[in-house]
Image (cartoon, rainbow, N blue to C red):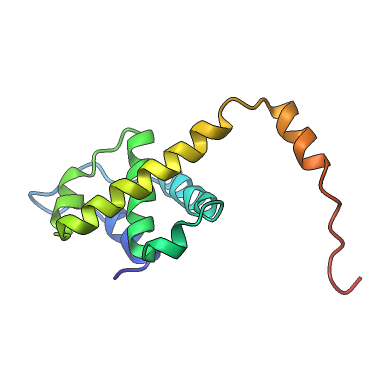
Amino acid sequence: YRAMEMLMADATAKPVAGQDPERLNRECMTAAWHLINDSYRLDLCLYYPPHIIALAVILIAASYHEHKLDKWYDSLQFHPKHRQQILEVQKQMLELYEEYSHLEHDEIRQILDKFPPLTPLGT
């Protein structure tokens, strides 16, 4: 198990001889954090350990920003079962975005406007 912060630090570290020279930039790291936040819209955290979800979103963000982390990912030496779990998480995350991709900004705003406004606690 490794925390998201540790995985991100490793993926952004300066390359070592023999490793993939392209590393994650700040934009890609921000996208990965947004993906983590979006993962809470699903029940992934009930079925998969945090490091599996973290790796899945790092790889999605890297792919979206056209970063190649193949050598880094292979260096993690996961059990094939864990690699399969990462693929399953990626699939579910991408299905989430596909489900919402047909909505226009105005439609999303209309849906959100139906919720009652929240009053901050203590006021």
